Image 1 (cartoon, rainbow, N blue to C red):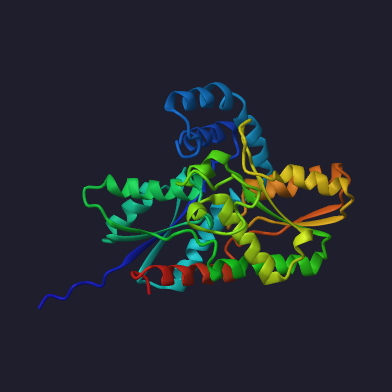
Image 2: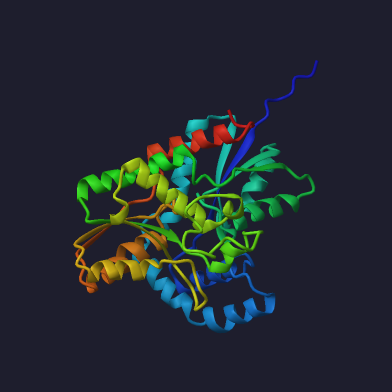
Length: 349
C-alpha cells in the first residue's frame, strides 16, 4: 500500500507593494507598475498611458521619493518589514502544515515568486488573503485578480481560494478597537478621526448593479444592503459604526473621512484634509486618528497623516494630532490573522 505524503497548503498574504528604495528611479519604477493597473486607473489604455507618461511620471516620482525618505528605516520600507514580520508570526501560529509567504502585487517579493516557491515545495493548494479589510477594485480586487491571473499562467494550475474582505469580522474589529482604545485612554482626545484610503466615486457607483443607490443620497451608506454590498465607502462606514459601537464613542465627536486622492475627479467624501483643517479652525486641541483600512503602517499612514496631516491640523489652529499605529505584526494581529484564515478556509486547520 502506497502512503501518500501529507498535503500542505500555501498561505499567501498579499499587499500592494513598495519601492525597492526611496530613490527617485526606484519610486518611478514602482509607480509605473502600480499606476499601469487598469483597476487602479480605470480608463481606456491610451488615456491611462498618456496620463501616466505625460503628467504623473515626469513629476510625481521625485515628490514621492522625498516622502518615502521621511519614513524609510534601517530595515527598509515599513510596509515590507511589517508584512515580513506578520508572515513569520502567522507561520509560527499555523505550524508546519502550512507554508506562509508574503507577496506584493507590485515589486518584491512578487506573487509569481511565491507561487513558484509553492510549486517547488509540492504545494498545489493556495489560500490568498489580500490584506485589505474593505473591498475596493483598486486594492482587494486588483490583488485577488493578480493571484488568480498568475496562478492561471502555470501549466499545472493550483487550486486557489481567496479569503473575502474581513471588514465585519470580529478578529479584525477587536484588534483595531483595542489599538484605538489604548490611544484614547492615553491621549484623552477632543475628537476621533477614522480615516480610510480614498477611491474615485465611480469605483463605488460601478459596484451598484441597480444604478439607483450608491451616492444617490446622503444616507446611502448608512446600512449595508444588496445594492451596496460591494461598495467600498459603505463597507468603510460599516467598519466605523462597528468601532463606535464597540468603544461607545460619541458619534458627534467621531468623524469618518477619506484620504490619498489623486487628480481632479471626484473622490469619495468627506476628504481627510478638509476635515482635519476644519477641526483645527474650530479650536480642537487634540485629535486621535486611526486608519482602519490599513493593517500595516506605510507612506499613507506615517507620512500623509502622521506628518503632513499633523502640519495641516496645526496650521489651521489645532493642537496635537496623534496617529494610532496599524496592527502591523503585533501578537494580537498575528493571532487574529491565524484565526481568520483557519475559520475561512477548510484547507487550513
